[in-house]
Length: 326
Image (cartoon, rainbow, N blue to C red; front, side, top):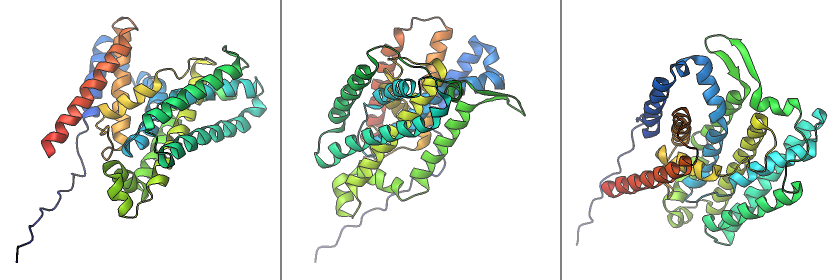
């Protein structure tokens, strides 16, 4: 009888590991401190987090989709829709703010469901499905607003991006946007680590066919990922509206920044590997880079070129590491 070959047991990944995105962020923030030393003050660091909060939240939502082996290119359009819809529906009436916030999240959930259903049941590649959704949502938002900023955002809505509590112990100031950021990251972390969903998402991203044969609800897992991504986009839009008011370009380019942030932080672009900290530290690194470029007075046009270069290098490094593991 032919002996059955023995398969070496898989080695579990270490519980604690130094995230590459964290290292990059520390190096970049140190460079920022060299150019502008007052960035080491707690108050300015809180302001840095306040301005980075939209990208961090969007990256956390995008991570859910990336873990399942997909992309969501519609998040920037959803963020823009949230800003325009809020300004038109509220139209300066502070009493309407909370009802409209609920409406915005319902709209985001609807977009996420459409993306998830098209990818899960029609088997359309996510990059094509969400590209179509991006164009559709952008077109609807511009048609609704007439191609220009309309309406008005009241103070209680703008507070999500602008409100800062002063004289806070130890840190000096605490922006409301940072509180929203911490709350969203905590919930996103719990979704991947405190529930069974996280294991299902990794299994689907690693090998969807094997996951299906093992009884994993592949379709539901993917749909939930797109819904979470759209919810993060609405939250991002609310913060952007609070920061800078109404703009028809509020979310332009954010979808690629969110994907780049996840990859820079160590998430595997084809799915099956990554954590919330991949998104958080990757987004911090990317925003620190943009801040450093601005402080150095380099042209704004360089941002897109550098972002593309970072994405290429990060994906290449990820594929190289994967080949080394095999």
